[in-house]
Amino acid sequence: MASNHHFMRPSQPLSSSSTSYFYIFVSIIALTSLFLLSSHYLAYYSSPPVVRIESLKPTKQYVSVNNDDNGAASAACDYSEGKWFYDPTVRPPRYDETCKEIYKGWNCVAGNRSGAAEIVKWRWQPNHCALPQFDPLRFLESYRNISIGFVGDSLNRNMFVSLFCSLRHVTSEVKKWRPAGTDRAFTFLKYNLTIAYHRTNLLARYGRWSANTKGGELESLGYKEGYRVDVDVPEGTWADAPSFHNVLIFNTGHWWWAPSKFDPIKSPMLFHENGQPIIPPLSPEIGLDVVLRRMVSYVEEKSKQGTVLFFRTQSPRHFEGGDWDQGGSCPRSQPLSLQEVEKFFSVGNNGTNVETRIVNEHIHEAIKGSAFRLLDITQMSEFRADAHPSSAGGKKHDDCMHWCLPGITDTWNDLFIAQLSSMT
Ligand SMILES: *[C@@H]1O[C@H](CO)[C@@H](O)[C@H](O)[C@H]1NC(C)=O
Ligand SMILES: *[C@@H]1O[C@H](CO)[C@@H](O)[C@H](O)[C@H]1NC(C)=O
Ligand SMILES: *[C@@H]1O[C@H](CO)[C@@H](O)[C@H](O)[C@H]1NC(C)=O
Ligand SMILES: *[C@@H]1O[C@H](CO)[C@@H](O)[C@H](O)[C@H]1NC(C)=O
Image (tube, rainbow, N blue to C red):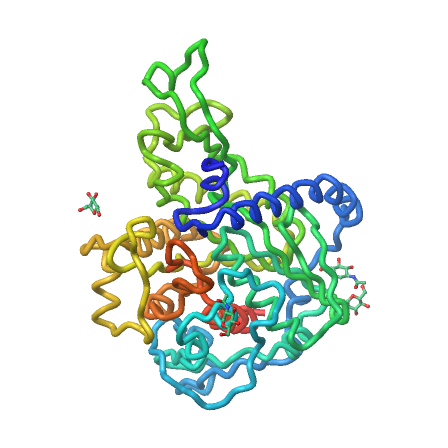
């Protein structure tokens, strides 16, 4: 039970046993439907039409960009640097707590998290341009026949749910299905626009490893238990994603700093390549570099011509007074100041949430010179210590890792759509 629990969750488990059962239930359903459906849908989509970049061209330009001195649109706006402004102006909500895809633990309004309604009253203002709220109807109309895949851990699912709820709010005809190994996908039928979530923690395939009685290289070094991580094999949940979607958003990071699962002594990551253990064994940080490099090449090789590739930067956690399992909490009701952000996240401070910027260094290095673009949500999110579910819904441990919905992953999607439409 306990190992299943940890298997399902990163270092921030949702605590109740019903939650564990929920995840086990969901994964059984997902596995079953994968077997039942994947062959059908793969056959159906076995020869997808070549989608060129022109097919991604939005019919309308609806992202306002400042004009620079030459009068040309400043496409190179850095959306990641800016400030949050409190702006309680009444805006029509993108969606509300009744959106059925919002996972219970993230539904802060329904879960009575104090100040939940305030979270969306802050507006991100980049220093040199505007980042308006995206218009879901215009988005659907502009991206017909397009499929968008989110590949990653539960933080990417959080962003996926935000996009789903925003679109579902303006159109009701939606088909739920599970093509190409997805955890879940939705097609907005009137527009034939599909959004999908592929669940993967490390991107690379991994599984339990135990010493073989016949011995071996790892056994002779004294290893008894751990996780085998195949640096050159993408996890099956997303291996078909690059040839299926037109736009992909990847993330990984939280699970690489999750000692509750990958304990360096009791259950270390044991990296393999070509099916053989890598000797001498790699540390997780080096293993992460190798995996990122391999997965970036895999995606570049397998994706259809014109596919737009994003790598999302690390989502910050905001535990104060200890980590998630040491009574840490996130009681703030307002964004942090710039000084507080540095105190939380500067690598030199080695605070509880120090992994945020370290992960980003690895990501930056891995996508250099590749076809991937960065979706840089880290800086804007570092301020938002107030936007996590915390104890919403009465959890045993505070959740200071995921985000309330509605909430700031809505702004991540504004950024994603602004970047997508500026390049197509
Ligand atoms: C939230 O508050 C309402 C009204 O006070 C109550 O009916 C509901 O049960 C509460 N929900 C949770 C998850 O505590
Ligand atoms: C979407 O696909 C349908 C059928 O293949 C086609 O008729 C339509 O023109 C396409 N729409 C766009 C905007 O590409
Ligand atoms: C819907 O879009 C997909 C790509 O996402 C395309 O393969 C398919 O032909 C489209 N179907 C129709 C009916 O336009
Ligand atoms: C950072 O802090 C952790 C404990 O919180 C400690 O184990 C580790 O050695 C520290 N690292 C550095 C580089 O100081």
